[in-house]
Image 1: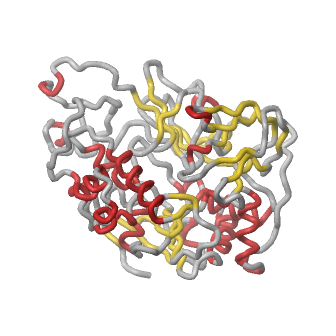
Image 2 (image 1 turned 60 degrees about the horizontal axis):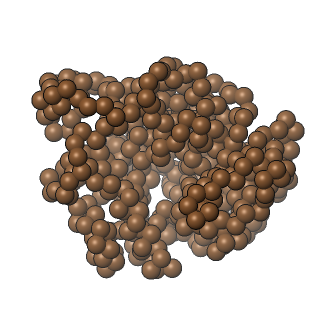
Length: 450
């Protein structure tokens, strides 16, 4: 095993409301949803209508361009609603669970004893294939490809992120089965990336057949993009797959039981949560089934995911397909008396503009206020302090703005996705939507190269 990989550039943002290590098992949510908008680059083709009855694992929709990729129901029940947006785009398919707990039957087998084609077929039919994503472009992996490696980040350094070592401590068998399936899908290695100070008794230390890599450093050390960059960088024409550790467990359970098990752990965190905890629920659960009765009064922003790269949802919305965290922060819709002239003892600052830098371990209650208006993109040198890639971030952002494909390619667009620029967006004094710019650049590259 190689030595510890040290990430020196980055930023840890310490927020109030980290989830205490207590797991609450919730009741079956009143509603569950699968949202096509969670999947970049797909065109959904519905396989159900409102009031249809479905089982866990029943097909809800497929991708028009790749009909073999199926998206299935996480629960048994009836289709409550198919909500649409502009131009009748499908936003979400809402399911009302029933008590039958009916499940579709899939292949039950030891992945080590079947072929890679049989493994792929089982993942496609069950609807678990979309948990495997590809870099570049951050899209669902193409089942006809063979990646040069598969990456699993077993830790998350984002603000208030869940502790995977804790929530998966009793899932070692299923995790190993999932790994055994993934091993057959690549011609290279399966990289399991952990924190340097991981316990020797951790479930991840017992896993066989993987390359265990240890990382040390501030956020974004836990981002899989950072890990790929330091272990096996992506060049033009190469493809790397990655997957969340909870989804590895789901794959293992598919082969162990023959059923799609959509149970999922969420960290309910943030300064506006009364009792931050972990909750065991269902993938795509309604937000209020997790947060109800545990929220402070006031104007609150609900975020499916972490505060830096998560998506805003309503209190009656649904969790994202790839998210393991529900974050509640105060809205920033208020004006500050004296603004930047105030002493700022409670304000977080990267530059040391406020005296809060004297308390490096202080946890902050940060709201969503931009603290200033949007302005021209300025060169300040801050991006380079928090961006750990050997890539010029400002130049790549500018190339994405002007849609210069050749320049984006030369500057390393294949190695990054929008979440890799979340810290740049956080420290940007110009208040630019950098992640949206990078996403548009990736979409342009994908459409030009496919």
